[in-house]
Amino acid sequence: MADLVYHRLLTTLKKNIMAGEYPSLKLPDERSLSEQYEISRSSVKRALNILADQGVVFKKRGSGTFINPLYLKNRSVFHYNNGSNLGVTDSFQMNGRKPGIKLLDFQVIKPDKELRRDLFLNHDDFVYEIKRLRLFDDQPFMIETGYIPIKIMPELTREIVSSSIFNYLQSEKNQSVTKSYLTISAEPSTEEDQQELQLKPVEPVGVMAGIFFLDDGTPFEYSRMRLHYQYMKYNTFVTLGED
Image 1 (cartoon, one colour):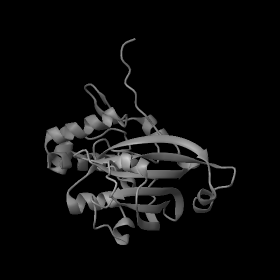
Image 2 (tube, rainbow, N blue to C red):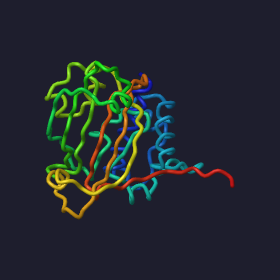
Image 3 (spheres, rainbow, N blue to C red):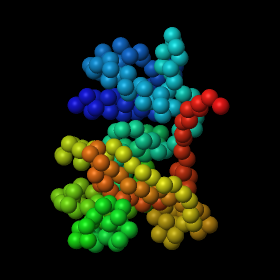
Image 4 (cartoon, helix red, strand yellow):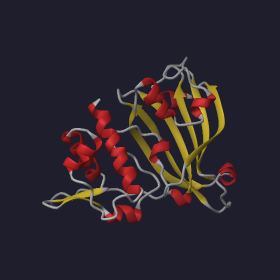
């Protein structure tokens, strides 16, 4: 329960920051946040430490916690909350525009050797293949193809996969996807990319592919995401040691 408390505060603070609710770029102090959200100081401290580790905020001794202006200036559309539910619906944000999902395909398939290896499946296991178009309002920005073992979520329906699967997992099964291993690259766009993402033949796509893990370490989904090149923008935060 304690983990969920600081996860919720972490998500709330990021949303507030993205919405420009701290025009002075200074966050309320730990005691104020603790009283406002009725949670412990330790949960507040944990959430702020994660934001600092991600480079979203920085702490100035004796003055408080401030939002990193470079984060605001160069913020990516893609935001992962470290240790929280890593759903794409929650992780992609764009200046208040509402993320949406259009289901393109939903079927059961027998995984090939590589997919069985990635998801640690047996020869007789089957997976859902879920292809969805992600949008901001009515503007498409990503084609996502995911593979989820049926034995993990046998109850999946078209209705469930037409919205956030990870949110369903958390609310209905009390489980979270808290770790992922992703690769990021770029390649020429295909005819499908050009049609669905409204790209010209000469324009590329960004590609993300990886495995998402449940909080108990179980591989939950292998996903391939093909993004409109305009959304291929990421930030990182590096801590330098002594030379």
